[in-house]
Length: 189
Length: 178
Image 1 (tube, rainbow over the protein chains, first blue to last red):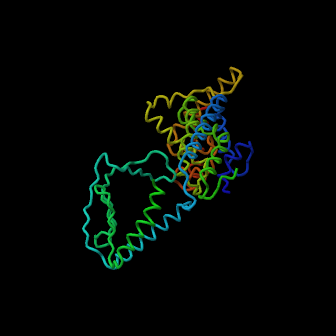
Image 2: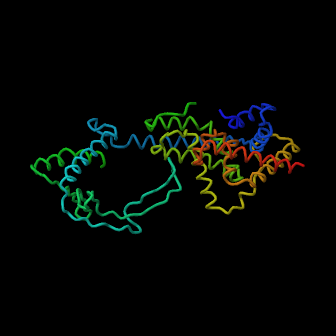
Image 3: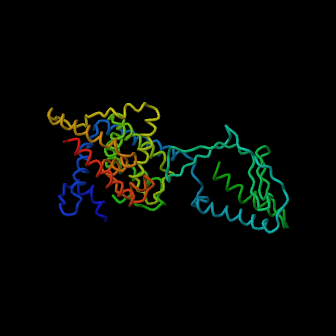
């Protein structure tokens, strides 16, 4: 440990240190600590603890009341994310080789949108966010040439997946409809 | 308590850790908020509120080298900032000197109040960053590493600021007592 970092600990212990040049700083540190020594009101501390425990119990009750996830789907979120990302990449990879031609219209942001991004440059921030309001009525996944792989139209509620090299349309519909749609509905509903 | 855990703790694990920190951190948080606001009532409101805010934010908390106790001081800092957004800055200067010491002799109390006023006045002459280093290191009791993580600076920079701030305080307090 660097000597300078020992200042608070040595100040608290009241250690003399005549030889290392830290004595004056130790004295000042001890003086600051003593001046701001703080004894909270025990009644207010007890009340704060009671409110904390109450809030904790309420959160626990709320969690218990949530619809339990079927054991079939009790996989870590990371596994689900990896699975979905793999499907998206597989689709994207196929399409990247043979770009499609569906044009996408970009949507401009406006005040009072349907999505708010909270932005912070602090890890674990819980406040002091900058906010950005967006209206999202369509989501598109584009390849480098600006053509669409996936489009979502809020107006119609239709997700359009653009698949080139399509051989068996019924197999794709079955895969999306019966494998992924049901899982996603169960997770997010 | 060893606070350093993996980032894969369950929410229940994190709640248990947070609850375990209450008694250890409440008075330090109150002391930190008191040094920033000068009001015991506000300081203790903030100390209590920190735990409620932390409880709500726990699902998004990840321990990436910053212990949970240091995270609580970041929340306290945000609450102090919120406090000043809603109040005039006059209160910052009016330091309450009743520090909860019971059955204190009047002369001892008077001397303590004068000392607090002297130290607080000297602190105000430091730069805002130096003041924060002194508060986090000597009033909140955080390590230089934790202080550095909270302030977005390097460990070395914090220690340098600490040395500089203590040196300046020493000069100012020395002049003050002459």
